[in-house]
Image (cartoon, rainbow, N blue to C red):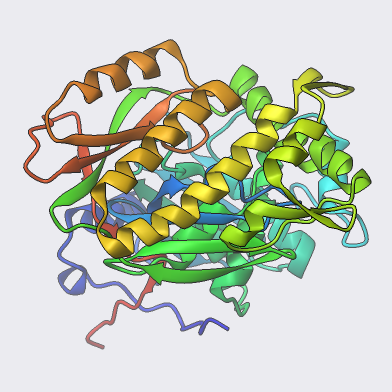
Length: 432
């Protein structure tokens, strides 16, 4: 379990010599005054291969990700001895928010997801990710105390780097620290995935697991199954190449985009899963898993795909595509495993080929591209030194992930991402 220290008193001349932490401290003191604080640092998530797989129940998903050193969310947290939560942020458009930990109590003998599904989605607001973390902490632990929290972030919103999941984890950490609750990285990762359902999405825990478990100068291979996951550190690949992102347009998790994302999740979690259970499908770990079990016999997954209908009529979403969605996650599973081998061998050509395959599949099988994403990607492929382009995150806009030679002249629009550490609870000592 994580070790919960007492909050240290922050003295400015002992603060980390980092402009973003200084900005966070200035903002906290302006909003709340001086206080004893916890400092939490959460990275942006860069998913290389395995998108849209962590929430698939019939698949023993393998996903390759890493945490960004360059894009981080910083939270300063001061525990309270009452039930009030106050949230502030330096980010534009983030209104000051105050609530109590009793704002949305779900009875512990209820099913969290069933309760959320029985309600209308909450009105869009940046604080909903913290509200969800507080509501889920109350559901699991029956917390007693609130907190003051100030957020300063360089993870762009609506970009595919999952600023929403970072904010959810900040809220969960604040609830745990303010109530002296033990925690570990796997527990908070899984809690983060379910707490985020509060806002209306129905995704998995890949973002949160990356943010909790990543290590500096390493990629992360996540393997999901049986309600949990494992995390293995990987090589970062050829040392003359790097990972970049370029922004296309906002991918707002609301309205039509939220509906499209939840349709993808629903088809995998319910429609396809039910169909596969009827035919006795069983997926196995590793490349051997590309030959699956069905009705007691071994078959290639492509035969399973051929047995699925192209479309199914869904009560929730109308006519939904089934066969292509199954094909996508099986092909992405294979790519994630082959990618781990390619980075270990320093095989740039294989990495480029896998990224290109993923780009085609998100366009053809998932249909998560927009016209602007296609135009930006076409321009990237004309640039010298660009070796691969793919969608970052859920799609429908946001960032593209670019694999390029270090010598490539990409211009000022691009952000280079160095694999960095996962969530850090920073101990700031005073000289008292």
